[in-house]
View (cartoon, rainbow, N blue to C red):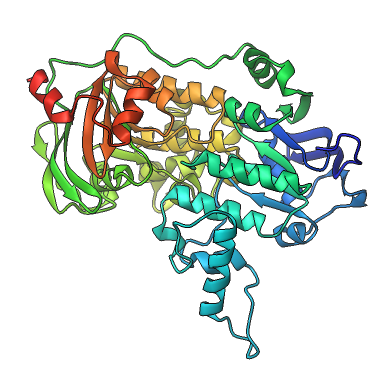
Length: 513
């Protein structure tokens, strides 16, 4: 970075309000060519609004944005890209039913002399783009919906880079990405060409690895603009939260009811991507599940939640065979899924937060086809305190909420469905320290009440800190099981990589017997 160079991007007193809610208040900062600047803040701090403002999604109420000294007021995302600002969004903006090639060239794929889109040409050009960005494991002809989330995240990032932006906005880019070094190498390459990067992440190791400087937002205001090396982790958390907020896990005395019959039993389960999986889950237990990308974890959760049929095997709830043919059937048996992808799998973005929460039980608040809003609110109020979701968010459109508050709403909806067993698939992905603590507390309280949790996470330290024991998947099968005292990030990773350095699942079953 050339510190003597003129700013490439300047924000001057940017403010944005949604009714009584102040999303941004008088935010000013600048980026210089070749700089990577971290943007930090709790959920609801204003980060998403700031990214949307720079991306052309949201128009500020007042303030000025300049690119190379010229006024920057994009009308939409396409206009922002044309003016030099490109964004890789956390909540992916890809069209899942279209191919990778078409997505890379949206919204204006090239046409031939007849005005038609040549699929062969698009795929050839897309293959070159992917190769240029060191992506060799994705076919341009593949539909995006057929890719795992981590590869979809790669496509989102590559598409943002194809516009050769002056300013690149990366919003939680590694939340679903298994290969961080791939991204870091690309960032090193683009800043070498003078591109400025605004890097939004809750992962401090990434901020310290990539950024010389960081900005911290709190309640819509900029509270800190500092060299990252001058700050301790606790100083960063304190500025984000306005209090000391060093991340801890909700480890406490185990809530497992060991003498009780198993709540959930899975026996010799087979399905596409799932190979002879067996395990049992006691009331009060939080059972962790780990696995590198594409090792069967998503397939297993889909079978348990009724999204995919099993080929053979059995699922029992409280000892009784459960025939699960749909998500509704899974919920009837007490299995409730919090899905992997908030935006496409968990939210109804055209509805309010309250409506998103009350959906599973709205019939309880309905008479003669009309919703009794007071009755609906009484139902909602039974679960929102359990996930620390502020009541001020309930009337707002859920799309206007931060990622962490959206996730709290999804968890509240899951609790309102009356689950016996929660299936949590990476529920803390892309949320801040404060929201993580609220999720951990909800999990522990649910277990104390006798519920069971199957908890997949990409954060290995989270599994070690939260779970009573952990199963590790490799190639669709359980490669090993680690008890509480045996869990460590190294041992989990060893099993997840298919190495034989830890005891196998069958050996541990014999010992337990």
